[in-house]
Length: 185
Ligand SMILES: Cc1cc2nc3c(=O)[nH]c(=O)nc-3n(C[C@H](O)[C@H](O)[C@H](O)COP(=O)(O)O)c2cc1C
Image 1 (cartoon, rainbow, N blue to C red):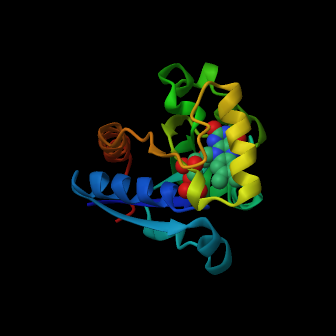
Image 2: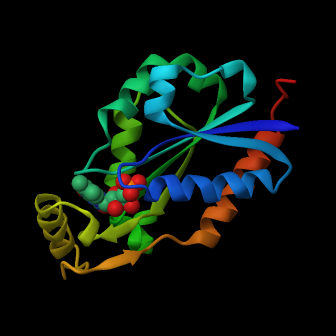
């Protein structure tokens, strides 16, 4: 059985939820799959020999990614070059279908440009707007981003834009990529 580790960075928990859904979808394709917070992975390390493949996902925060995302890719670029099969970016600009392709999504372009790991397979997933759970300043800033991109600006807004069926299909896609590679067992 092939094994897949999902590494993720989530600030508010939504990318973690997406990662869990993805994990279940990959496991349903007869792969062993676990997930690990990138902050835990950075502190405790990853047993790379245990995994045939690694998937990495992170949410966009103010036009970029948390610095731990880039630091991890820098520090583990050799392992990621060998085992990293896909990267997914979670952001709310991707609520618009046309923003879910690399050519139109500057956040994914930014990852590809700045990351020491250059993943071949890329995915953009629409995230969640949740003003009530964000601090006042964050809410104000994101409401501004939303205003500029014709999104919701009501401070009470909670909208989950994630297409969960599409996340499940992404899991099947990952499993098919992994099943085409030699096993670590
Ligand atoms: C502080 C903050 C900044 C954000 N900046 C952006 C942004 O620049 N562009 C964007 O499309 N989404 C932005 N978002 C939306 C998040 O990417 C989205 O809410 C995602 O689902 C958050 O995932 P998380 O719950 O795992 O942190 C931002 C969210 C927060 C809280």
